[in-house]
Amino acid sequence: MARPLEFDKDVALDAALDLFWRDGFEASTIQKLLVEMGINRGSLYSSFGDKQTLFTAALDRYEERLRTLTESTLNRAGDPLAAIRAFLEERFVAVDRNTLRNGCLLTNTISELANTEPELARLAGRKLQVVERPLLKRCQEAVAAGKIRSKLTAPLLRDYLMTLYTGLALRGKQHGNKKQLRSVIDHALASL
Amino acid sequence: MARPLEFDKDVALDAALDLFWRDGFEASTIQKLLVEMGINRGSLYSSFGDKQTLFTAALDRYEERLRTLTESTLNRAGDPLAAIRAFLEERFVAVDRNTLRNGCLLTNTISELANTEPELARLAGRKLQVVERPLLKRCQEAVAAGKIRSKLTAPLLRDYLMTLYTGLALRGKQHGNKKQLRSVIDHALASL
Image (cartoon, rainbow over all chains, first blue to last red; front, side, top):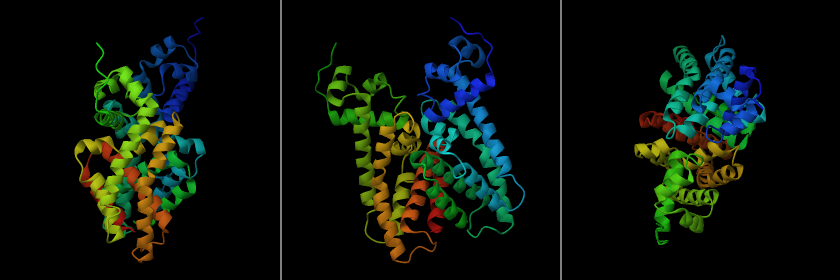
């Protein structure tokens, strides 16, 4: 029996995002997506297109969540290094265990799909700009204000912190040990 | 027409490793594995068991390659920080583009399978000990020799460097920019 077409697209897309984030692109089969989204195959294709298109919509939504987080941390007024610390701590320490165990959907996607779905992996890489762009701005501010002891330029500082972000996301997924992540953040920020 | 059962198991396993490393566990379908390994389905199952068992054998082989690398770098005589630098540079700078673009099979596996094949992800995590163990030893040496300016203990130093290793593997996969990876390594080591 076909279910009615009326359903909350936002709710269904959130459910798809949660599945992709937890299990990855390949393991999130259409069948699993239908169950999690609570819709039928016809509704999925008519409302969201194919799996790649649905995944792209999930990446958009994840990017918006990450943007909300950077607005309240990375972009906040005041000391640029404190803002960077607030971002890393909100993302990797002040989170529940499940969020930590899911890693970052963007870095997960680069890791899983770089060689098999390069368009989706590149899209995820571009979406990481939502972190990289404000991070660079705050690094420039920190350098200009003489707050950086090391000889790193702002772009290198940003590359270093993005490498750290990527590593923290995957280590959190591996062991979920927030105390360890916090110590790593402490050392990394003290080293600038 | 069935092909003869005689084939070089080592060569076939290397081919499976290369596919898993490049494309991940899920995207390496049995059909693709058969093509890359140059064997038929019967030989695959009789010689290597199911896909999970084959993947485990590929992880074993990858671990051995990583052990060979750590023997000549991390475990070499002399200054412990120079040994750590040699390991990171051999792994992320003195490699060809394809190796960089494949990332690290162990961290790839943790990223892809943590929530869908937790046994395989945990196995990959344990195999990372092939790096973590000698890394801790060299960190202890460096701390004991007064070569560490920061207040990090040897285990925290190891956690920091493993976070860096993980981030470098994934960033290399994303952009393949060795110059950037080298700058990040330079800063991280100068910060200790």
